[in-house]
Image: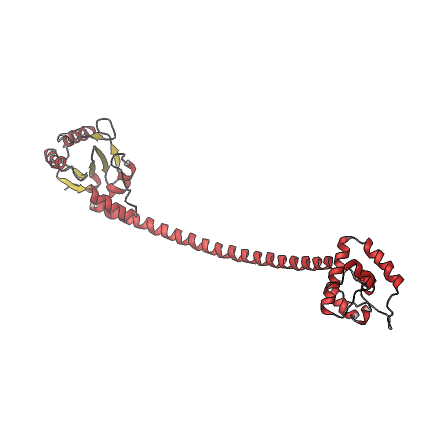
Length: 304
């Protein structure tokens, strides 16, 4: 009976164009064997190719008893049946007692399931030696296959745990970042709303003539102005808190005063004139009995 600690194993792949060989001793990691000085042997479908490969391996490893104490796995690609038949004859000729024939398509599909890989797993023309020795060969013998699956399962569990931990951290960070962003946006929104209110207020003040100008011109533009519009109404329209103080009884300005204010009004800028006239139009809308003084009617019309 051969002890496991003295076990030597060979893994020989027969692909469409190449033969590749690996060895493992005492269940140690697999290593690539050079055949005829190269990493692979081009068999060109010659039936003697497998025998040439075994002879070269036996010579290189100094196997005195040929393959009598060596476990050999032959993994073949579909369509190489003739080479497989010849390989069995060669194994018997080299006194191999422990050998198995494995279909490449079957074991590669099995490896894909374990590794959760897509169908683009392996190109047999440009061989991935590392993949063969790390993921395919550990599956060829039962004891190695169980150990490999256990290692793969442990790796998957560790990866799953790390992924779940990362996702939890990302979720927590995302929630915190989102909350901070929402708070920041709310603050920015409030600031913008405050700025809009202030801008509107400033714009309204700019668009409205000042109370002093109104007090100077409204009583001369309209006849009997203060008998129609109350001081408190004007303060609301203009947007001032304290209404103007008008003497009672109020006396309308005489013609001389009206003409003087008309000249002053004409000296104002167009912008200032328009501000006063816009307010006059608004007042006429609410107080239809307001009448424009004859002196100003020639200048600004009836404000209808």
